[in-house]
Length: 203
Image 1: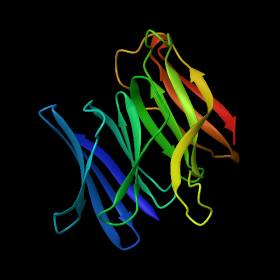
Image 2 (image 1 turned 120 degrees about the vertical axis):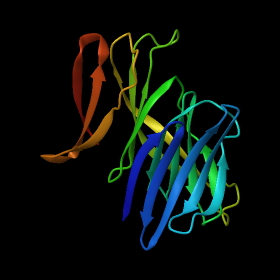
Image 3 (image 1 turned 135 degrees about the vertical axis):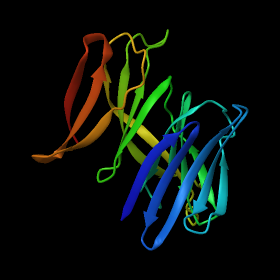
Image 4 (image 1 turned 180 degrees about the vertical axis):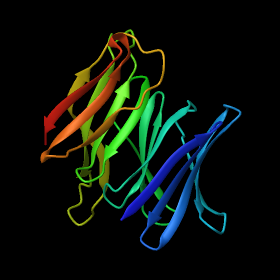
């Protein structure tokens, strides 16, 4: 069972995770806007376990989420990309870049079905707000049948479109429908209409 809490103070995000009897803390710091890194600490001892560098981008991190996909790990949403650091041991994480593009504003994970909801601002390429509902995937890329080399990715199963303007950040949510566990409920604000849109998806 995983219990996590996400909050931010200034330019620092804290991600608390309780994994069985082990408690750790993911700490993301923007160091002067030049270097972006995410640190994993063990709670109560302040011992730094590992530092995760966002090697291909220094853009602002707008979302940190713990995911139970495969062996578990950290989903890091930056303005220009989404990364999944798969936890392989206390000190080893494997980076998987998810095939999502746009100017990210929000990430949300439905843990029981392991669906991911990514929301994006309008751009010159996409004229409206997009909320992309994805399923997390793993596939073996090894050509050797005796070796397993799984790569984590995601597949967009539905895209919801919103208004054509977004001036403030908003949080979108995906959750199971309370009356029908076979359906997902996607909730997102629509700034242009000053409303909240709710969509049902069968999974």
